[in-house]
Amino acid sequence: MKASMGMKEIPAKTILSARKDGWFGTDYTMNLYRGCCHGCIYCDSRSECYGIDSFELVGKKENALYLLEQELRSRRKSGIVLTGSMSDPYNPFEKKEQLTRGALSLLAQYGYGVMIITKSDLALRDTDLLRSIAGQAPAVVQVTITTADEALCRRLEPHVSTTKERLEMIRKLSAEGITCGVLLMPLLPFVNDTEKNILELVERSAEAGARWVYGEYGFPVSLRDRQRDYLYARLDDLFPGMSARYRKAFGNGYWCSRIGDGTMEKFRLACEKAGLLCGMEEIKSCVRDLYGYRQLDLTNLPGMTIVKDEINE
Image (cartoon, rainbow, N blue to C red; front, side, top):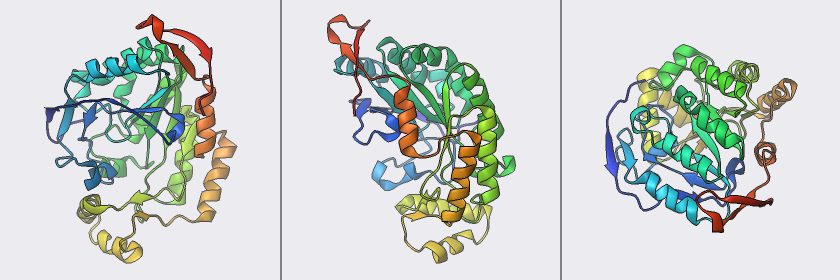
């Protein structure tokens, strides 16, 4: 994997943010980096609302681990920390910088769980820390996979681990007792949104040991301001004339998908047959079942004593 650009340090006041939506059963969001150099053509984080002008230039947050430790110490309750929702915590620079590894060490120390969203098999490096977290709280690795076609993967997601490599990562992590899931989103209309692709990925995810394959609402891709412009330009580079098909089919809509109820039902049935979860609420229940939310004893930091199981709905 190669970075298409470089990295810079950026100022930061906070690392940890509380979540109100409980996405996938998580309580906090942690962003150690801004921007991403994986080059995935469909990434919504390029959208103007996120304020990242040079998206491929990765920003390393200054004093990130110091800030994170202060915030973990100050929280009255532990919970599950989500990382990777805006930028992959395992970008190529992480191999040297080790911000994600340092953060996992702190989460283990302070009794927090973690949910990682990534497309990089660099996460295997941190198997030891994930095992340590899993001994006291949920440790979940969600792997975004969008196509079973290795050649197409390289075109749509040029600087990340291939589909085969990501599935092998799931296999290895699952064998270590780490809960893994697959995010089967987004699927690009007229490109990788075929029923064959969807069902093959369900089968291969189950074989690799995933606990779920998440895909709802037709596996849509977003079309928002400058992210739309970037996507259309890249689509035309890869598939000449494709942006015109998008404009004709979806106009100025925000979400776009061609997948109907029939294909969604086949997807759900395939997941059920394979023993996989696929809906948000059932995945949230699975994640929450990995432990009862533990309230921190703040009188005994940093080695915190877990005093009571408490479901935090």
